Image (cartoon, rainbow, N blue to C red):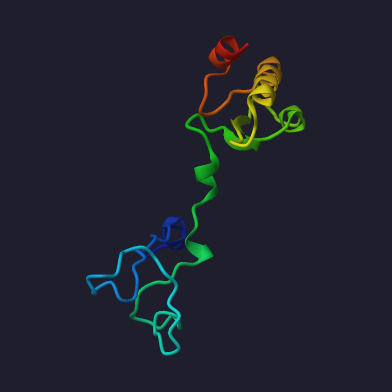
Length: 127
């Protein structure tokens, strides 16, 4: 097998299940194994895979369908530091309506697209 092929092939994320999944009363939700003799906790070969940071999603998940980087926005300072050609804004859920409108207007002037909302329609409705 060529080296280029092995590098391009990604590691498939396993189905993380609990150690005692065969018991009926145990749900499928992941719980860290805590037993002192637990082979899963010790990461022994032949047992279930343990959830770890190495199975995280790649940087492609932080991109828009158009290829723009998604950036969370909380303040006008965040909007001013953005590049409209490479990034799109995602408004934080903790931002109030008054500040949200100010962010939308500032983003519209700078030519920044917003993810999850229609900026112009939101400004017309709320203003």
